[in-house]
Every structure is written in structure tokens, then in C-alpha cells.
Image 1 (cartoon, helix red, strand yellow):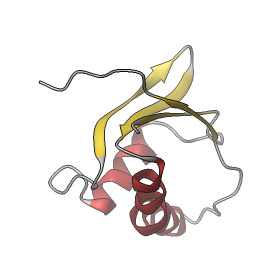
Image 2 (image 1 turned 45 degrees about the vertical axis):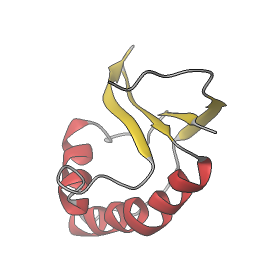
Image 3 (image 1 turned 180 degrees about the horizontal axis):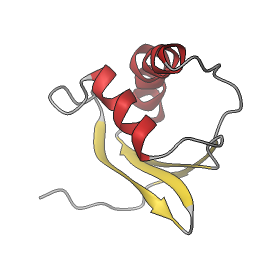
Image 4 (image 1 turned 30 degrees about the horizontal axis):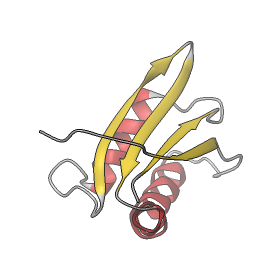
Amino acid sequence: MAVVIITTDFPEGVGPDRYDAVNAEMGEEGNPPEGLIFHWAAEVDGKWTITDVWESREDHDRFQHERLGPAIEKVAAAEGLEVGAHPTMTEAPVHNYIKP
């Protein structure tokens, strides 16, 4: 079953620049993760927000463990930062989506 995962409340300093650095590290643009249906990131009401629709929670978890987590750690280390507080993630089953 498809799921939507909305991620907000990122630690201070996380926004477009770090998002772009992590995406560049993963090479996601030319190699999207298996199971990803839709992704967007933007500032909403002053908060950096990422919303993904996945074919399953397992697809999301695999991506987070195998690609996203290591990329975040590498970017943080390159900037002399520690990976500290985690953002808030909200998950819900998707009732319907249309994929052209």
C-alpha cells in the first residue's frame, strides 16, 4: 500500500543548501530510489518540509538506511557538523494518487 511521509521540524540550519548537498551526494536526480512515486521539498510556513509518496514503507526505510542516512552523515562530516536531532516524520496511508 502506498504511503505518504511528511518530514518537518528539521534541526536549525537545515534548508535548501543542505538539502541540495545531500541530494548531490546521493546522485538521486539521475538515479531515483526504488519505490519512490513522488517527492517535493519546499519551505512551508517558515519550515523546511519534505513530502514523499512511496509504494510502501519498506521502500522508504530501505532508501533511508542505504542512501539517505549515509549521505546525510557524509555531508554533515564535510561541514564539521554532528548529526543530532531528527526531524518529525508523519506517515499516512495514501487513499489515491494519479500518476500520468
